[in-house]
Length: 472
Ligand code: NAD
Ligand code: UGA
Image 1 (tube, helix red, strand yellow):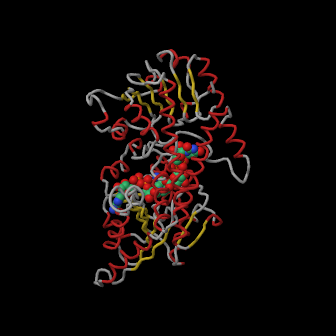
Image 2: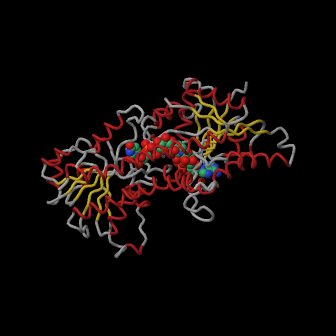
Image 3: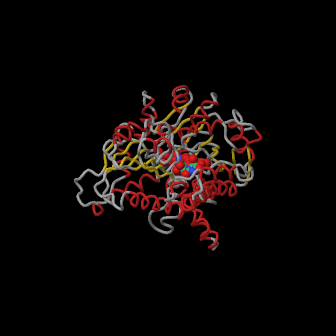
């Protein structure tokens, strides 16, 4: 039985960091090293001040405090950490290709390939290589080929080297990463090498029930991860289409979601309508699914999944139009408060956040924005809102301002748009807000989080996603 004593994780991001922290917490006898080419990110992971960790995840800082320096280490020394490892997780980013064949749809595997080359160069002895990143089906073959090519040219350096490649996709969601990792629905492991599979299972059994471990072949494991994301995203697009129907007919999306979700066969999760799904994965993974289906000439299947993406952007466009219509057909020169910029609550991540598209469109229409998010920095918002000079009449004019609190954000604004469902937005003092805003003013709640009655009583106009009573 192989006993893993030393783990290396390549990629210290939203997956690598929290996942390795939880492994280190539950496996005190295993040394866990997280490596990254990004020096700044590694310095943040090593920062004494835990509020400077590169990612915000509830519960993460306690584990870092407990394990960092004992059996959890963050480093840029790839060579040494790979050399010492019995098991290596590849947890690097897998973005959509921006140029070349498959641009806009296929996954760019350059970071995965680069990691495989580094492993082939530095690994010593028998090494289990585990795909943690979400990858197109059959990527394990590419990794194997890179690793095996390095063994073909035998030298004293590599004569005892050998590799086993496994797939072990990660299902955590940002904002609940630690609880998802502590209590996963399943641990999926794909591969052929029973000994390597058992060594990986052995790590998880330190805190996960054996009944939750599912083993499959490599390709089924890789594909299951893509399909799980596609099904989740599909539910969001489905409920978002119905939010528009509720608004048109007078039905209430919250009631419809509840009634539909109470059917055990359907289930209550992922039925919240909103401004469309964001995050680094749903769009890229479904685009990749569409690409793979087209590649295998399954055009109807590809078109079916493409619709899930189309509806997502349609919902965002619909909101922008609706906001402009309600504000007397123009927002030019009007100041609008943006509440929430992260793609969901409890994370500082803004990748593919609906807020980016919506804010850019509002700015294009001439609006001036005050933006507040409890965890997203001004620098990050500035990066996300970089608007090409062609789209701006006067590039020197400040199109948006950063605010430090909800109450500062709404001062002298004509509208407030809720884009992220942060807890603190649920219990606001609407009297204060109403007095700070210019009248007549609007509240647009794209996340169904504010109390409609209280907003109305404070004298503000309200529109809420899927809220059919607003028919007029
Ligand atoms: P991320 O961008 O936050 O982190 C990836 C890290 O890998 C970066 O810090 C980057 O510098 C590093 N990296 C890239 N190439 C490297 C190399 N050759 N050597 C060393 N480091 C390298 O990405 P993420 O959100 O952690 O996602 C990683 C993978 O996990 C993706 O495939 C994603 O689809 C998947 N995934 C993400 C989530 C999520 O919630 N973010 C959940 C499940 C699965
Ligand atoms: C998602 C999946 O939930 C994870 O299982 C998966 O591991 C991960 O992608 C990944 O592969 O990266 P994540 O994107 O972090 O996790 O967060 P989700 O909770 O899935 O939310 C995604 C987006 O959908 C957010 O913008 C969220 O606001 C939106 N959403 C979610 C809705 O609009 N309605 C819902 O009912 C649920």
